[in-house]
Image (cartoon, rainbow, N blue to C red):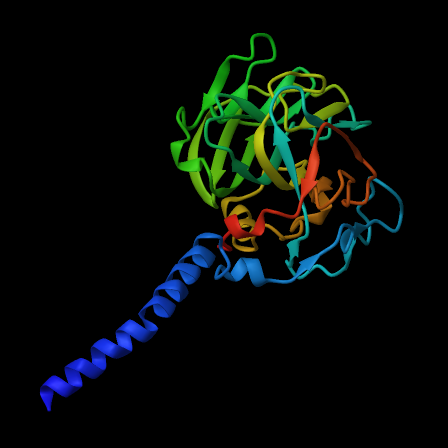
Length: 285
């Protein structure tokens, strides 16, 4: 009887073993491609589905609010940079898009491509807010590092990360946050920008371009608190601005480089493409 059962089991395996193996291989491939990542199945929204409305005109804050689908859904597209001179240039910013104390906060989501030796994620004319892979504040004269948080960034390669940098003009202190947690803080020097900025490069017209993906860039004229930055990280890559009265501009980079912060600081993409092939690499917080 036992021998009969063993023979039946062997015949079953011989008959269906290859099918089971093929199914296992297919499931493994789908897992590697991110098919079972919940973010890959999440709904997405097109460009402009959510935007900030300023009823009294660009730059005003009275009765400011958000309109549209602003529930944190994923964007359809993100911006793809390949280094070099590629950049999204923003012209027409105020001489100082910051408060009288020069307080400023810049936040964005990024996917830094492995193998990148350099590349700046956001820069003002003659001044860089965040430089990668040496994340920090840079000098306007020599572009030397003034405030360095992580000289290797090995933990930031090939993964989506939420980056926030705030500068307190009263104390001259810069604080870097990675994925909602404070990574470093120290003395920093801030130089007033000259009415132009670049996403994905050291400065407008620069040649130190970012290599990877960038999404949801937000610029504020205040020093956001640690709790506020943590809340922004928790809201994910589709999160909307949370301090509207201090919002200068908002570039979701969801299919275009327009400012959806209500002040019309639209960007001009130079060699930058927008791609839908990004969700499988993203995992929501």
